Image 1 (cartoon, one colour):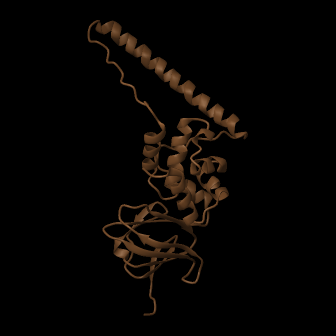
Image 2 (tube, one colour; image 1 turned 30 degrees about the vertical axis):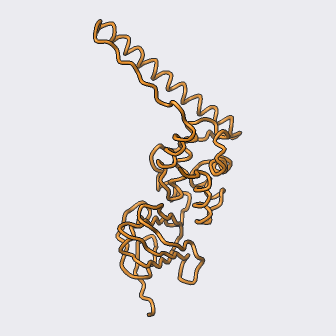
Length: 237
């Protein structure tokens, strides 16, 4: 078990992200993001929103969204799945018709439920535009690029060994975006910037994704990241 809210907050603060920027990028209102960090899940319109927002927010921060949904389910969801009795084989014709009727009713009930959730979120948010539930999978990298029109999205993850890492904005003398050690099996680092300067202690252990495309991280202590890819930089000493 781990603390869902504190883990999200630490990841956000480590990347120096503010709620207005996150709201634009994830399409989730700031007050819902704060509620997730405070574990005030009752502040969200419905349980469906909690899971969708939780997965989307975690994955935007470079975390494992499914891990956070599983943790939420284990702590807050009870008796979610009920066994469904199978129809008997006798009276096959009548049973088949009853099953078809149930399927139609279930489909109609699902449509009504989804419509009700959208209307509830619209009224709950007090906005003219209804809040949409994020995709149950990963957040589209395309959305991120539209939210950050001049930025690149870099995700770094350690595999087969750890690597000390320092990432600066623009150049080695720029603002420090991240400093720490990445370990295999731990969370990845998600970074935004038009131009980034990466110093890695063991670059062979890094798995890199730039703007949604997996790329080989070059050998060398210093690497410049731009929209065109990675460029190795010669450093003194």
